[in-house]
Length: 73
Length: 321
Image 1 (cartoon, one colour):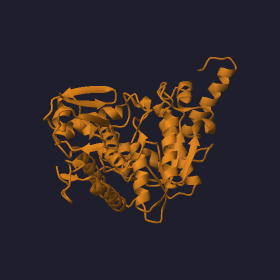
Image 2 (cartoon, chains in turn red, green):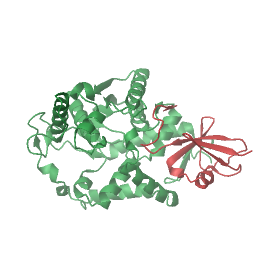
Image 3 (tube, chains in turn red, cyan):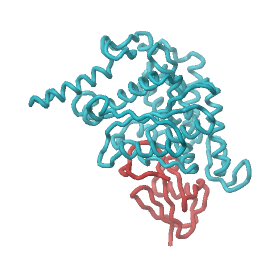
Image 4 (cartoon, helix red, strand yellow):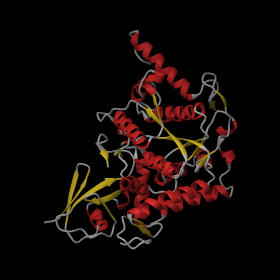
């Protein structure tokens, strides 16, 4: 089991027990450029990721991205 | 991490402020700070009639929401650019802007560029040399013109835009790298209506990081268009934002300090207003009457006349120039 991070149509896996910030750095994402959510709840960077977590990342930099059609709720 | 105000679980940590807040207190904090910036930079008073430029994105919808919560009389303006990009980009962003307005009982004016000028932004870009087929140049020119016209025609006191600190810092970095002194002299939280025919402009979100406006939209349940324009892929401004974010990750507060130090330098007169050559040489466009520094017609009228003439030329069987 591990933690799955999803940013648009990109998916990454990291091991449980890491912080959000460390996980983002490990997969090469800028912590300043995304917000991490778990089951709709916004997470701070020091949140420890748990086994089986599905983390949805929301890009915050304006511009780019192939899925303009999708809205964020 | 705990909320500094109540000790509950924090929803957001703003490292540049050493401040973590829960959902409830963040949704209070951001409007309070917005009001503070409105007053600090003397953007507008409580009775001002505001026109908010709304794109359907997180910044403009969050700003409209905040201004509404603060009790300002703020109407919205959505400009239909006719950008599809295989994503129905414009129609979807218009739907979200209209839905936002309807749900809150707010007034939204929609200006459709194709209905106004006879072509969409991508069509216009393809027919002119301006921007070498990249629509961003024609788009920016058109939006500035339409926003100014709509604000003046509607009798609004201030045109308000959702520019955030990342937007401002990226523009500042770009203008600093090229020492574009005219643009540097003009950049700031407020752009005064220096000439008749120009509306006053203000950016109440100019000190919020982009992740903070996105967090506000998410926590507030505002449905917004996730990506910005499909033509923005590869834009220089995004490159600058990424560079700044790399530095911010190592030095929290760097973006804010970069922008605030610039404003302070302006305040101290270190970036002279005379550096802006356009400010002195503005006169009314012979076609539309809006101020321009170009002789005769303004760039907007020149560009759209050219777009229309190219359309006629093509219809008559000629090759576009």
